[in-house]
Length: 605
Image (tube, rainbow, N blue to C red; front, side):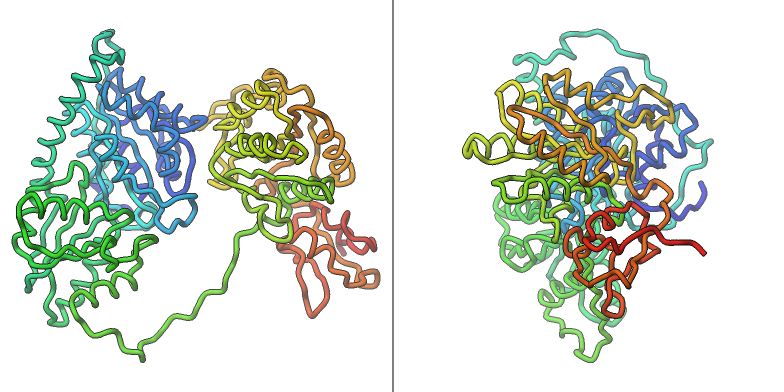
């Protein structure tokens, strides 16, 4: 063993390697992405790693490898679990041979997600065991336990870190390479009575799953991860994950100050719920506060345990309004909850307060081609009845003023269906669906097929910047390379669209503004399903061109360059419009908007 200072996601990736994982598949999504990337970066070639086109595909690839006896890992964020849920629900009934860990990173806040859904609730719904780490060290250690449990019970197992666990750093003990486990699979063994899901098999296995989970509840009650710390009063706090870490810090400080402190129960294996341990804990207290993210999952289970065991214990938490029903349990909030519960005096008003941080709304990067694409469509459709159905990715930021070009955003790929639905209600509306190149492969192709088959009238805008930008520039089928570093044939979006039956498909450089505007006008007026592929590389990945500058002698301070596109590289300086050379990458969009010809490339002396 040796010490390393690692991010939580790195700890999980390193643990999977040390546990002998052989096949890793996932789809990028913050806060989960670095787990797979850690394995890819440190892989000597013996572990197969792929970014799959979506989470469903990733889980199915891992299932096949696990059927063959390999230890596998699937990575995603909480909304990705929705995509993977179809095969996962059936996989629980079929089971696995090699250990399978399904890493689902939840995002309380949410900081970078559409939802705050809680994977613990999904674990109970899908009947899958779930591990819920409180820090990087526990996440590392839990991986080995998760694989062992998966193989013991022939079931996939959830690992559910949250954002603060995924992205916090800690110095932990990491196994040396000589200590890595070696699992050599025997390969797939044909057995249709096991691997082919028929109703009778599901019925029989369902009963086995319920029996297994009842036993696991008892097993988890004696698991060292679920710990009780005795207090000095008949009050208790129950916590999990990063909430437990925050609670423990506060209680340790209070104890050091000589205050009475409550008993503390840590729940690290939320499903199957450790009922016996919880029951013993509840017998030692009269009142309990539950601090958890996100659902009142533990709170409900404690109420159930009290009812089943006939215990008269007051359970407080999200349901009772003593803890906020949504959002993160940040340290200041946790301190407030505990102080109110324990009757501690509030912190002195003379305490040093940190200054408020300036509000920095997310915006498209300077030089982002999506800005030019949105603006071209906006100009072309000025004065017309339109809907701009957006999607998940950098281009969601097209909703910001002054562009204001995202009317809807539901989930990955949904813009295509929404545009079709709106068009059926109001046929005179010009319906546009925007989607990125990575998202096109992940979840938009089905929507295009549906539109062509059902004779919709809409325009698909593919914003192709040659990468998966928002989650960290991962490769996808259109980039020509894989996560294993192999070069492969690029899958051409235009060819796919034409193969599906889209008659009009036009490639367009969005930075040729006048040409782009005319392209949008022409294509949008055609009947049926048509597509424009705006092609220009992500501004972050390529060396900037010569920055632009403003000729103040020509500038009339109309501020159109600011009001029209909202580029962060165009600023006000001493009351006059200026270009921030540190941000400008020379895309030239602002120069094409300026009515006075006052913007041009900077002249280097």
